[in-house]
Length: 212
Image (cartoon, rainbow, N blue to C red; front, side):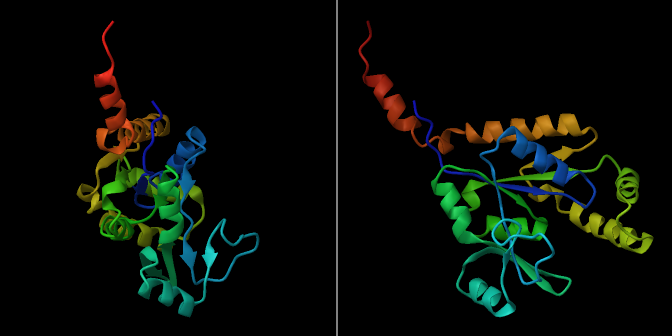
């Protein structure tokens, strides 16, 4: 049987430092057919960033037009710049049976679920084993000042308060076990009866076969 299905929208959220980016990278290494969602932004390109690969770069007017015309699945303003997920590439991937992985916060996840594509969403929230461990990881990255880390920790509490809105929750104590849990979730979701579009005709064919 040819296992035809629509692509899934896999939402992965977590507070900063919980391991979301590493898990996303490992999931895409496991299945290279996964498409990582490319966001549109109004901020200027940084050295080395490529249009359509890292971001879709748009000016503020273009971005507002896309929002007004329903061309964004989700959008938000972050530190004076707009970021959002264009709808067209996601719908194209869905029609081709390719899953799209989203690295968005709880607000972005809410907007995607309410976009009319909610039936195709699988949402996963990644928790740290403790706030102390989360802070240790942020400090170990050596990317932020103590003031920025304090701000990230405060934001983390707000993010974590939305854990119950997600389909699945992974406590990332061990990155290997968390990766396997993520793979298990995606494998099971792909096999859900209602997602296998060719299953009905296949079963009807089985029922019409004559017994030997």
